[in-house]
Image (cartoon, rainbow, N blue to C red):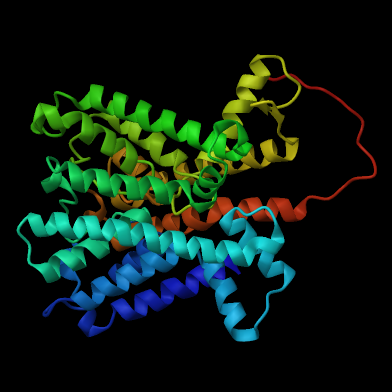
Length: 433
């Protein structure tokens, strides 16, 4: 259901983008470009092989925006709504799928969660669009363009998709000294990357001690990654004249923090990632691979998965028999799923990187960065995306598709296969290390 639903959505988007009025006059149709762009939008990635502002017409931009919104909202949530409209009810199977998409615990609350997600999305995006509209208007743009830019970038930011309309593949480079725009887009990215379940838990319980274990881990790990990423990126690129070094000193900390935010899964950029050093690229790839929270618009293996693995390591070092955090013990099955997601994701990324190197002949570091960006549905690139041959573009599109659906589908499949055993095999140990 997941794979078929997203594939159909990608197909619809591709067909719409192939329409003559979806491109600027004089630009011929290109199936691979339309397929790549549709996949990137549906999977809320933001990787682009053509310049969004100059290649696509207003209709094409509207199609991209719609695909981003539907993809970010989550096809499982949308499928539940469609099923309600068609047959007027939902079966247990559909409720379980919707539960996995939204992170809800009680099956009976799925429909309420769907409404909550829709309301949360609209409120956050509307607030962001209003602030961006005023900012773009103050920047000298006309009211119509400011309104369209405000809506477009509020939606793509909240959905952690890096599509922009500024042209020339510049992303947000022109706004490195515009704190209001960077802070607004940054907040939209963080809220979208945390997800409605965590935000709702914080609003409802208000105190740290009452928060669910998942909320505590997601918030704490997110904070550490954001601050740590900003410090590392800022330290490594502070004097690079092609990146942070070209920005006035007083704005460099903010830009370093924004980079740490956008690297988690958003894909907006204030610096040229093709010009940053390999050490900073290493930090960027780590942040992209981890991604945002489960049940959010972000990609990656998810902060939740990373937290479980980290807690398991700490618990093992402490000599504890099980993974424990904040006075709570995690089931072993959760750890097994986290290990499966992480290791299979690493293997997949390396396979894609190898394929990009073979098909496009690009350097290993650039190919690996591109592969992780696609798998993590981030949308950042060192500049090789527009130069990729069609074969490599299709491979990267597959990586975006798998990155969006793979971890979630794998977790659902593993959970569905779990069964209680009436016996346990004999215990036998082996050497490791």
